[in-house]
Amino acid sequence: MAAESHASHALDLAPIVILLGSAVLAVPLFKKIGFGSVLGYLAAGLVIGPFGFGVFTEPESILHIAELGVVMFLFIIGLEMQPSRLWSMRKDIFGLGLVQVGVCMLLLSWVGVALGYSAQTSLIAGTGFVLTSTAIVMQMLQERGDLAKPRGQKMVSILLFEDLAIVPLLALVAFLSPGGGDVTLMERLQGVAIALGCILGLVLAGRYLLNPAFRILAAVRAREVMTAASLLLVLGAAWWMQLGGLSTAMGAFLAGVLLSESSYRHELEADIEPFRGILLGLFFLAVGMSLDLNVVVANWQIITISVVAFTLLKAAGVYGVARALRANHREAVERTVLMTQGGEFAFVLYAAALAVGIITPEGSAMLTAIIIVSMLMTPLFVIIHDRLMPEAEVDASGVETPHDVRGTALLIGFGRFGQVVSQPLLARGYTIATIDNDPEMIRVAGQFGFKVWYGDGARLDILHAAGAHHASLVLVCVDDQAAATKIVELVRHEFPNALLLARAYDRDHGLELVKAGADYPVRETFESALKFAHAALDRLGEPEGAITDAIDEVRRRDEERFALQLTGGMFAGRELMFGNGGGAVPLNAGKPETDVEPAGG
Image (cartoon, rainbow, N blue to C red; front, side, top):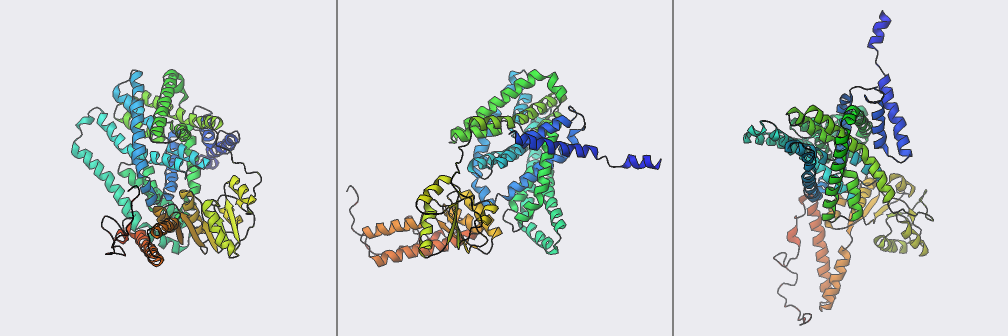
C-alpha cells in the first residue's frame, strides 16, 4: 500500500524526457539537412502532440509557459538597443512599420469577404495574419547573422511596431463586438491612460532604481541571486505591462532597452541566455503541438485557400512597401520571405475576438490552424529563397586566419581609411597586427607587401587570436557603423586596459562610439574637410598664420562642442559654431572681404 502511495505521488518524468529528447533529436537532424532549427522544433511538437503520438494532450498549458521564451528573447534584443540607437530607428518603426501594417491590413481583410464571411470577421482574421511571428523572424535573423545589419534592423523595427499595434487592435476588437460601440469615450481614454502610465512607471523604475538595485546585489557576490534578480526583472516588467493591457514582450523589450547602457548588461545577458534558449525552443514545440489536424482535415479546402491567399497578399504588401520605400530587390525579397507568416500575437487577437463573439469556436480553431500552417511554411520558404537567391559566397582561398599574432597595435579594417592610418605607425617602427573580413582586399594588400589576417573583429575568438589581449592600442577602422560600435563595445568590455581609437562615420556615430567605450573617435571626413578649407582660404589670399589660427580655433570649438553633446544632446554647444545666420563672431570681424571675382562673373 505504501509503495502504491509513493508511486502515485512520484514525479512523472517520462513526458519531460520525451519533450527534451524529441527536440534533441529533431533540431540537429533538421539543421543537418538544411531545414533550420525552427522547423525542427515545430515538427517535433507535431509528432509528440495530441494529433501525433499523443504524449501531450494539452499543448495550451505548455504554450503559456513557453511564451516566456519570446519574452526573454525580446529582453536580450532590448539589451542590444541603446536608447540613442532606438531613437535613430524611429522613422523605420513608425514609418516603415505603420505603412506595412496598414497596407497588409487593407489587402488581407478582403480574403474573408471573398469567402463569404462578415466584414467584422474578415477584418479580424486578416489583421491577425498581418502580425508577423516575432519569435520566428528574430530566431532566423540571429541564425543568419543579419540581426545587426541594416536590413535586419528594418525588420526589427517593423516587429516592434506590430508589438505596439496589438493595443489599438485589441481596442478595435472591443469596438467591433456586439455592444462594443456602447463603450464610452471616457472608458477608452481611461484604458489609454493606464497603458501610458505603465510605460512611464517602467521607464522611471529603469532610470532610477534598477542600476542601484543591481549594484547592491552585486556587492553580495552571490551568483544565484543575480540570476534570480535577472529573471525577476524580465518577468516583472512583462507582468507590469500586461497589467496595463500591453504585450508582455514589449515590457521585456523596454526593460532591456533601459538596461542597455548599464555596466551589468553583459552579466544580465549571460544570466538570461540559457533560459531564453530552452523556453524559445519550448515555444516552437508547443506551436507544433497546437496544430489541430482534425480541424485541418475537416476544413482543408478553406484552410488551403486562406493560407495561399493570405500568404500571397501579404507577400505582395511586404514586397511592395519595401520597394516603394527604396529597398533593393534582394532586400525586399528577403523581407517578404521572412515576414509572410502570421504570428503568435494573432492567437491573442483571435482569443479576444472569440471572447466577445466576433468569431465562433470553430472559426477560431480554423484561424489558429491557418496561422500555424503559415509558421510551418516559413522555414521552407527560407530554404527555397536561399537555394534560388543565395548570398554571394566569400572566396577565402589563399588568406590566413590569425593565430597567436602579436603587435603593439591591433588594426581592425584595412580599407582606404585603415591603410592610411597604418603608414605613420609603421614609419615609426611600431608593429601592427591587422585583420579584415574582405578576402579580395587582403589578397591585393599582400601584393603591396602587407600582411593582413582574415577575420571578423566582432568575434571574441578572432580578437584573442589577433593578439588584442597583448596590444597596447586597438584601432577600429571598419566602414560599417553598426559593426564599429559592436566591436568597440566588445573590445572595451573584454580588454579594458587597451587604448581604443575608432573611425566614426559622422558626429552622431562619434558620440555613440564614445558612449560605447572608445577613447577617441575620429570622424572620417573631419580632418580632410579642414584640409579642404585650408586650401580654400589659401586661394583667397589669406596669410598662412591666419589660416592656421582659424583651423585651430575651429578644431578647439569642435572638441568643446563634442564634449557638451555627450551629456546635453545634439544641439548642445551650437553657439560655438560659426554660422551665416547669426552664430559665433568671425575671427576677422570688421576686416573687409577679399576682393574675389565670383565664378562666371
